[in-house]
Image 1 (cartoon, rainbow, N blue to C red):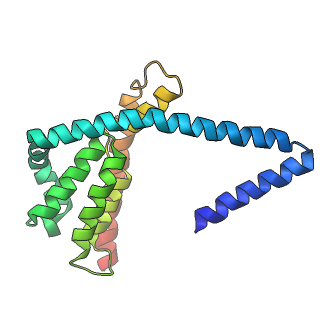
Image 2 (cartoon, one colour):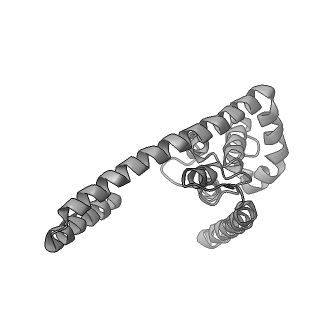
Image 3 (cartoon, rainbow, N blue to C red):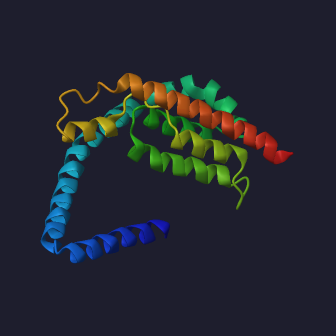
Length: 192
């Protein structure tokens, strides 16, 4: 709802300014150019996303996803202690984290929703600590390979779309550590 109001306000303000300056033609041209650029960007990103989603599918069929989930289990068990014994939920969380590590937010979203659905069964109508932690981990996910950002950079003409890797690793690690710390602290404060 809020985004609808914001976008409507921006469009209305643009139209009012264009009418006041007599530049309706420029506004129409900018809108059409923006739409064309959005389509180009969407198509170029689709190829990269399909590639990495295919890689995830190959990993899953080859058993690498299960091995990665097993590798992540000790860390995830500490982050989600309420669900450490629930194999299905932990597998879904591990798959979600794996997709986020590869920068596949589009593939991670349905997995995160499934994990949230499984978690919410224990506390219907209330977001428990583990569900809040899942949201934090998804929002501030560590990305080893930022495929979406690289696709945008490539579409914008970058010759080296992955040269941002060190900055992405540092900032995503810091954001995850900050988010996890805040979630743990607030979970303790909220109980008291």
